[in-house]
Length: 104
Length: 104
Length: 104
Length: 104
Image 1 (cartoon, chains in turn yellow, orange, blue, cyan):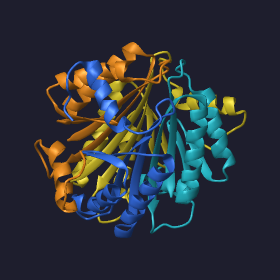
Image 2: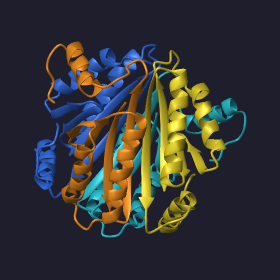
Image 3: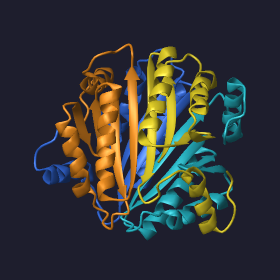
């Protein structure tokens, strides 16, 4: 399945969050799951339990740094498309249907 | 922590989803966790592992009925407010600050 | 249509947001649109333009208080169910399908 | 500001949505706004009114094809960072803080 993770620390003094988000990015990068970082969150691909274990790790790591965290997990799961690769194929399918390359 | 669960079945023929969502509502109601059903999702209160176990159950149950499911989990977690009761207190705090009762 | 609004101020020093969120709640309460406040956001009912006008007002008001705001708008819109009342009917339909009252 | 748009058609018979989503991608591509397509939604950058005009166009176009549409708009807006370019800079800042390139 695919899951977009967004971890938002609350009550941080500064509006800039990239320092705090770096620890989350490192955990995702080290997880062994395939992922894509985007401007509004990171999409990971994997089985439910591994993805949720990673989401918990990211959320708890952020809770070490600040006292309130809002985390959003958006899942897209298809049992007619088992295995991995959808993290790339979804955008490719869209480009085929649109008939031209899109900005990625 | 608080978590809003929204489970959306895709490819359902009918635009009406309440029949499919009833099984999710039954699982939440039977979970023992405190919850509130709203027009755009259900908020549950509990520890990470129990909430995510319930989210998995709801998601997997829906995947028995349809071949694609999009589930969104929005978490609000404060380590400075341990224990339960925030599911009621958050709205109460807001009403105190607004200075009048709000529609709930 | 129904729309859940969640307005999150970033960089607030304090993890408590209810003081800042009160101004958003007042704008929604004064809008004339039907609404329901829940523990994870407020659902409003109305036509696209009025709902989005209100969302903009809420977002901009929060940007007066803090320099970064994350706002999420989740819309559920059915052209086979015109008019209003879905803000109440969705939960009622679910209760009919579940066969018992749910916690609201 | 940045806004992630996700437009989900409900009641489509098929679990595959790329044919329906192609019309949304075409509208975004033709809008003149900078954008990035990802596996779980498309992020656009622009002023509130233009972004919301585009979101409305995408949502209404989908409502021509199906009778129920769920659209999610997630906004990240900073008044201390006016102008455009954040659609690229956010990920770059993160990579600087992580100290290595990330998968994009």
